[in-house]
Image (tube, rainbow, N blue to C red):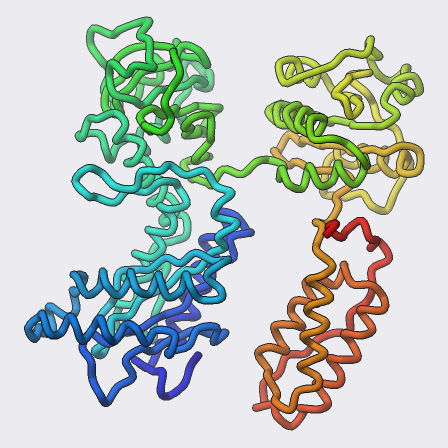
Length: 580
């Protein structure tokens, strides 16, 4: 929403666009599903009958000034309690009124029609021309719920801490946004005064202060991130460092000390610490309070993860390490750059794909296949899992180009061994292995990818060869870390959602009022979901679109979106619809 009645300062629209672009660059580089949305809310510091009390810079106009009318009562109440403030006090105003405003805005947005699906995060306000201006970050509530969080967000002294690396990213971005709004001149506004990599690194450093708190040694709150980066980069006698380090207070009830150093190693003594890491592995771990390495030990007993008092730093390979809590990877770091941890294969997509290929497969089989697949992704040189309804017959057919074995049920404990040689592992949906080291055959196909290696393309050829002979799914784990499911099925959608949008477009075509924003929103939906539309639905949408464009061709203000005709996809079938 932008207009003369909505302007606080000259460059506010430019600032909002810059903030949006910066958020997309930062958040989508970590997980392209995040799709952040940014808007600005300006609230008068003190009531003024000559000025609108709330102003918005919200491109899609999904929120209106009238939504925030309750803020005025808070301002009037506050002005009766607080004396007139000078300009300096106004510019640094972050006291009771700011807290009251933020709390109320959170309530307003949560109860808004969009609040059911979205979560909102606010920057500290910046004083501009009588208004406290807040940058608001909107993220999908459902997507946020897929990440692992700690539960404690404050220290006993009330200090706020991040519960996850993602919360640190949000905090660092909003701080950068507030700093950018303070910059002069705002015609040169740039929220990324620091590079994307600098902001991500800063967020990693911020989150590691939360982890350091578990050691209960306050002198180490700001050294752990840099120390782990340095240790992961060092080699000892030419060898990369592997092993784990426990971050917990000394004498933690779930840590059994097996070797105690008489002279602990300071975590900044990188050479000695790297040498000591040679003694550590997955069972014998270095013990640290985030400042001192004081020995080796093992985990013991049942850890009460609600305490959030014990974390693991896992050095996985040269320049790579991870932070874990209760077996959940909370942050991955590669070459000093932190990243959100995502499953190498999306679990929801894996289950959905197998359900569609192996119709009738039950949850226990899916769980077992998922567990084996997750373990197979840890194979460093890459591998292929070939899951087939005719695995036993395929083992016989391919006998001359594999090691055919006596059928055996496999689990995550053995998968590393049987994927350690070249070739695919041939299993059925019961996780019964029939052959290892399988050289997959197939026919030449146009569906290969010349930019990918031989492993991926042989899997594609094999799938094309088997497509009409057996239900088949191949999991391709490449050496460079890429994971592919073949076939790569599109996600399923609810057909009712498509029908509802067509119904809405029909009503729009019959309306006497031209709602351009609604029209563009609907057409954007259809363009994004064109694969799922039947030939009849494509024709209906194309006809309705032309009707609206012709009907309101004189209502444009010189700027209009050009929408292409929708074309049905021959690969679409009802299997892409969720059963409702």
